[in-house]
Image (cartoon, rainbow, N blue to C red; front, side):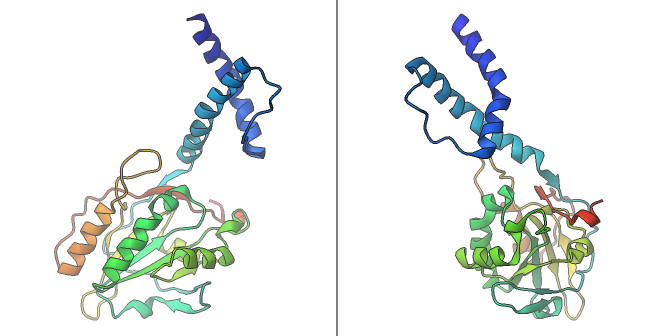
Length: 252
């Protein structure tokens, strides 16, 4: 029992030191100069501290999508697609009965968690008439890994079946009142009327580290409703993810 108390005490004292070290490098092994008892302690420390560090990072980044009135009309935009160099406008999607606008980025663990399922669902529903577009609005000043070159690589690597557009000015994110990644806006269009917002909520209940499978249940349900002309409930769970990284001079 005394040994257990000693280990817990050391763990608590060593925790901040371990975090400081892991920011510089990831320990892959330990020197043979350590005795077997010390080796055992440090292996325990590696197993328990590293996952905790990851969970704390994700929790600190959590941002929920904010209320946007249903019926909101999709804002016009004109944005480049880094992969092809093509400029895309809202009007390019007007021949479709529904449009899914997703604010995503490369680095966010919440986006990475859903990415494969997003691609799968987009592939499935674009064949049924849904239009899909993804937009990255993060500042490359603070997050260069979200810049156009890396966006193009990401789109090619995951074979995105939708244009992945770069909102360098962040004006489009502000026009949509987007605040996090991922964030989903589903619009429907009836006749010649502009796209109107019918869903602004989560992809599903799965989050990094909550051990729930990624299914896309919520987004699939509302897409099915829109494409089949069924009503959608106004009770919608907000999307949860990383905050959009605003340019320093526009930080609110």
